[in-house]
Amino acid sequence: MSQRVNIGIESPGVNVAVVRKDDDGWKFLILKRAETESYGGYYGFMTGSKQGEETVAQLVVREMDEEIALAPSSMWATEGLVQFYEPEFDKIWILPLIVAVVAPGSKVELSSENSEYSWLTTDQAKLRVSWKNLVRAIDETTEELELFPARNWVRIKA
Image (cartoon, rainbow, N blue to C red):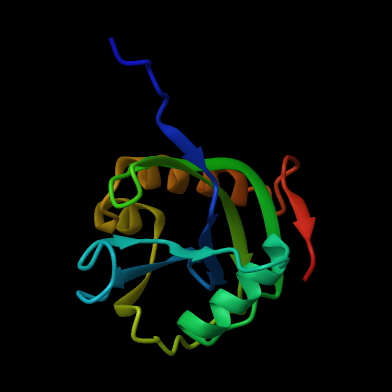
């Protein structure tokens, strides 16, 4: 009889809810992954993997610059975790959800990692994302944005 071995659990990076407050309320940046990337054609938040000794804040700033050519005006650690089974690595991934606020009217310049983007209201974003765990994250973030900054968020600095 073989000895049982658990599925590995890793936290290799972050999910970033990039948001901005326009005249008509908060909007979420939803990205469509390029067909040449993992999860090609799927819609979701910006993601990024940690490199070397960088902090989560440094990771978010770097990924935002690389993927969407924007810098956050503020970043917030939330209680949210995005977790899923990653078949490519045969592991469960748990990624902290970071909220990155950008200025109203911010213009996105996509890298080749993503093929499309939209600034969407809560309801529009929930219909566009590809995963239920992101629908829950959008609901929770929207509720917390009503008290911006939410009392359970912790500001992080690069």
